[in-house]
Amino acid sequence: MTGAIAINPVATAADRKAFVELPWRLYANDPHWVPPLKDEVRGLINPKKNPWFGHAEAAFMLARRDGRVTGRISAQIDKLVLAMPEIQGGGPGVGHWGMFEAEDAETAAALIAAAEGWLRDRGMTRAMGPYSLSIWDEPGLLVKGHDHAPTVMMGHHRPDYQAWIEAAGYDGVRDLATYDLDITQEFPVLVQRIVASGERNARINIRKVDKSRFDEEAALLLGILNDAWSDNWGFVPLTDAEIAYAGKKLKPIVFEDLIRVAEVDGEPVAFMMTLPDLNELTRDLNGDLFPFGWAKLLWRLRKPQVRTMRVPLMGVVKRMQATRLASQLAFMMIEYIRRDAVTRYGATRGEIGWILEDNQGMKSIAETIDSRVNKLYRIYEKAL
Image (cartoon, rainbow, N blue to C red; front, side, top):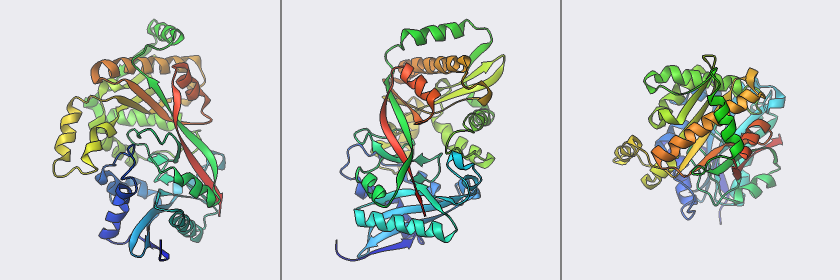
């Protein structure tokens, strides 16, 4: 290290390219890092493509030393976060930062200070992060499980980052956990009995989603999600535009037997979404879909065979939460998807999460099916 660090906004096409591609150098020797699809990252930070920018603003910054890029960060303010109750992690004055990558401690300190300055200049009084870019993208810093490859839509970070962020004065505010389980084994006898009891209940119907009615089904699932998660810490409701955008991105990796809807007396009241671990199918593409990556990926998605399935989303309508019926519906959906994941997709393990550290209901379900925490992601905060 020689020269001083300069922090500049991403302003040109060359800057954006450097911002997107920096992780390829920083993680070149990390066997567990999975290259993200560059087109996805470009879309995430593009206000013309990502409807999140309809209620939020962001600045993207690069750190350079002697002209060489040594780090990146985003700083963002979301109007929906500002409108949240303080007890749920938002409220007036709360700004976020994320997309954090740094080559060394000095770069990390300069980047975090620059993001804080941007937030402070806009009247923010508390900084939280990392959010890349929102709770619905890749929230939290990986603090446990660096020896695991990330599953689809989960982050992976250098172990150094925890100390560098804490050195900047940040304290952890929430941990998000993922749970690992062997899905080739039947669940404990208690769970099997609960599932069998549900199958005898004429009021309950567990159905697959109907991909021929994709838009309608996506709206149904995300409507349940917005209700189910509305009291959760960090929850930001998805807008109609974001629901449509998420549906469009998810459609190619949605498989009817891996997403179940639970109906009681004919009314949809819960759902569980499971995705094949797309990272296993894209790792060798090195982030590039062109010129041949698209063809390879589409071919692999025709009948994906993967080791891991991830459960990113699960929800029960609020009025039924904390009831025995809600747990029964959850176990039924988990079991039906487990069977198909093993027999149709060759999967051997599942990853559930993320799950908030204070979500006792989901933690209990995860522990009852003999899953164990394999990764922890931490969200930090600091008064500005």
